[in-house]
Amino acid sequence: MDDQIKISVKSANFFYGSQQALHEVNISIRRCFVTALIGPSGCGKSTFLRALNRMNDLIPGTRLEGRVELDGQDVYSSSMDVIQLRRRVGMIFQRSNPFPMSIYENVAYGPRVNGLMKNRAELDVTVEKTLRSAALWDEVKDRLARSAMSLSGGQQQRLCIARALAVEPEVLLMDEPASALDPISTAKVEELIYELKRTYTIVIVTHNMQQAARVSDETGFFLNGRLVEFAETKKLFTAPAKRETEDYITGRFG
Amino acid sequence: MKGNSRIGAENGVGKMESAPSRHADNTAADDPATEGQTPFSRPLFPPQSAVRNRIDRLGELFISAVAFVVIAIIFLIFIYVAREAAPLAWRTIDGISIWSPLQTPYTWQPVGGVPKFNILPLIVGTLKVTLIAMLLATPLALAAALYTAEFAPPSLREWIKPAVEVLAGIPSVVIGFFVLIVLASWLQDAFGFQFRLNALSAGIGLAFAVIPLIYTVSEDALTSVPKLYREASLALGASKPQTAVRVVLPAASPGIFAALVLGFGRAIGETMIVLLASGNASMLSLSPFVPVRTLSATIASELGEVVFGGGHYRVLFLIGVVLFLITSLLNWIGARYNRRLRQRLSGAA
Image (cartoon, rainbow over all chains, first blue to last red; front, side):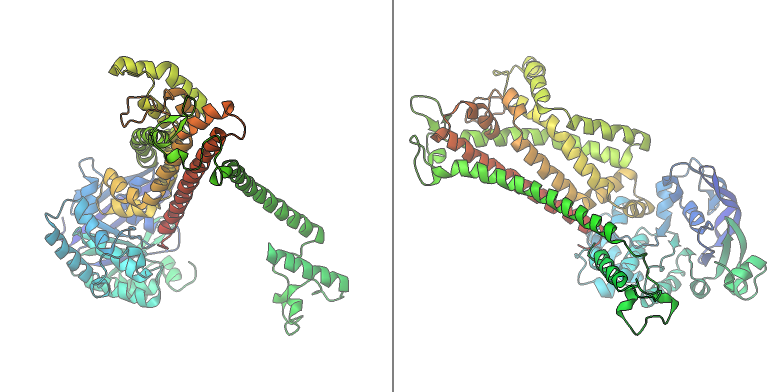
């Protein structure tokens, strides 16, 4: 097993009922890399992302064939504890979805349900630490008890990132985290991704090719449920190996 | 509605002028600068005929009228009830004044040598039965709602919801009769109560009536919590029960509060079940094992036998006013909290 590889997917096929959404996907996601997944709507990139922490399990009638490995461990084996898996593989959603609770409680939620903290003081430290890593602390430190709904869209999304970081995951899956944000908030989130890459392995699905080019180390291009090309970001955007990739990144379709 | 009719009116004008231009029925005709200049000055919506327009307005008028009539009926009922009670406010009738319901002794005994009209036993009785019903119904209804909203497989959910809603359709007289004939005897056999019919038996009957209401309203509140919250919680490594109790339930709490308030209002106003199952004797006591008489059951059982326009008659209407105000207030609070739930979940709060 390669030490550099965090997640390894081998000939994955995914089905919604009888409809096949992923065809023979093979990919190796490297540790402490930002891996971007691009492709037109409905190409399977979000489905693929949600297969990595088994969020698709929540949709009845779905199944995955093939193998998804996290540090060499089979994610879909019966011995895998899904709760433990999701703690290790955190997720940020397209629409920011803070809970209708206070800012503090949002961040403290993960550590609480996972029983990670022994006392309030420890929790306070974690909340501050994660809010700092999400570059939100200075903006909210005086109103931790206020409702998370009082934050702006960009702040809400960074709060969701802090919430995900609070359980100390190893991998962060981001499903178009900036698609609903204004350019300034987007820049902040991208900056944050750049910072987080030091500690975390990040997989980001995005519609925005410039964003993929800016933040990622490696990029995968999905089309019709197949992984068409997977390469170093620079190479994929400047010298794509496949015709479809070139057509897509030059804006011929999608 | 208004916008459409305005466009329609303009169209009419355009037609009357019978302008030869192809823009005759165009709203952009308002603006001479753009007329005929670009192909975009074609109307966005096809012009409406005057007939169609009139039908729309008639429909609107009819719906408004029906809504107004319903509101008027409710209002008039209250006026009527209040009017029947009102004379007590300025004169004493058959030795009864507006203060009689507050005078000692604390006894409701309208028929007797010296009639006594203190309503405290009725109020205590009503609250006692209602409280028992709520204590029984709340945990059951909420647990059922949480189960169907969060845990039940979809096939089972489609079966449970209608079943509970059918329970809401059982006439209260049937529930009351069941308690009177069957359940009260079982309870007495099991616990050896001195009185077969008592506040507890009435409270249990009342709980049957209230459970579907609390269940339905709180289940709606729980299912209206966005899937996004559940996903976020599960993605953090929370289990399904943790998600249900720590995220979904708090998020839905205004709606659940509304469900409880509406249930309380229903229980306080409910008449037939308590009339049949409570023993219907006004005894001032805090024990749940003695017979009680409620405000509503008092009206139901006595109004048929009082002298029309007499003091007793007026006092019963006064009770009606009190009940009306309590239930209206509770319904208002319930609606308010349901609104708050929607605001909260849409992110406005």
